[in-house]
Image (cartoon, rainbow, N blue to C red; front, side, top):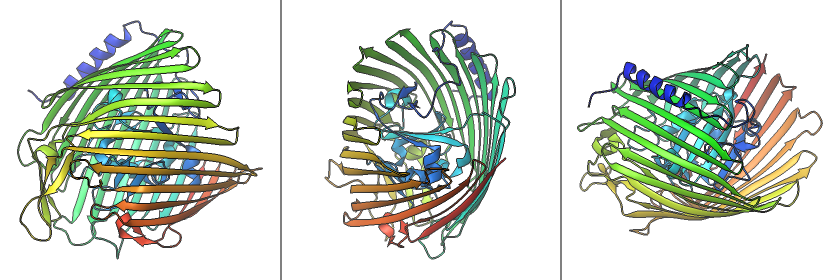
Length: 614
């Protein structure tokens, strides 16, 4: 099969665009700019529903939440999320993180609903977390986290959940300058919004940062300069049709701390995404074409990604909405392939129905068909239901499925890990398959107090794992294999309470049993019990001062060798604002300087920052 070209990709995009725009489909009555994002979520169903309506477990982190914890990266923000654990392992290939026991390469990371190319190309599957450090937080409007299998709408890679980072859209002219510094890194960032000038608007973001040399800590951390740029432009053809073009460029020039056969990592990523959105009487449709190229200059490897997706949501009746779409994806190249094909093609079709059976019951069935040129076809069904007991109580149930095709590197890779050992691919690997269900109950006692409790269980078949090969010394070579089955089961409890006088108390508790069913051994990077308590105070009159303090406890954390690791960290941040123009903050993570290497607690970390808006 011939490789795709830019001309052919453009031609296909225009053909699909012409077909879908001339189909006569119309959009929902809401205009393109009307949704109140504080009330609606879009990731779980790819349509706008309130959090109370969505059957899946969805957590929303708002712009205010981001500022209150003094975050300097998306990774910092996610550390307080429910049943999400981040292991700051350094290691040069990003951090490991889990949702409900599902590891990094089972979690799909999106930006404005788009996949990010060139992230998940390393054999440890953790490099997709780099996007968590690249984004300019001044341009992040909110983050939506969907816990549980999401294959019916998103296909491969959404076995454990989906993290969708939603950026600001242009509203009014503004210019933001920000500076941060801390134990791990320092950065300068810039955000320029042209505002909406008749039909055109644009947002430009630039971020220049430098990772510090983490001296005295474990080898493998990277340090050095990074830079990223994003240009996001909208053109309103009329009140019902819009074009959006996003251009991204990222570059890293990093050194590895400690002794390693690989001393540098120089790489860049270029992305262009063109989206058409349209609407008329009863429907809302879109077409997106994304092309991305990732280049590792150190290893002289390139990775290309092209994705075209068309989607339409039709309000077929007052109580029924149907969403359907198709997707075509091509990936070329690999970071560490010794032999075998470096190209993969796949296409997909999916459909979802939102049916309201009276005022009490919302049913959302969906199904997706995927075809991969190497692994054949896979079908992923999903069924969710929300039953409204009354205005303040509801019961939710959701059954979902997902799968993950082996990456090119897992199939054919030959990767030397710092000269200590080599990780080999396995061309006989089969795709992973996950099925899971959850039940939850939500209740608001009044305007000040709300609770939620969830039980979930997931089972994975043909899980891909890295195992040590016989022979060798202290560090043995490794190979990817399919293990029989894994499972994760747990309970999540969440509570929020407004104490009055500007005080807000929130917390969550998670019990998790994640294990390899064939051996009975627990899965790595999971704690049996996790507790988070957060107290926030905002000066109630002028809201110029805020203080946020939170503590996170782990017990029986499994790092791959032992279950006895436990620990906690206490963290706090102080924010001072002068109107909406100026803000400064200072924060400390791990105030009491806990050093627990198994939990990646490397002592006390500080950070400060300032932001000016013009």
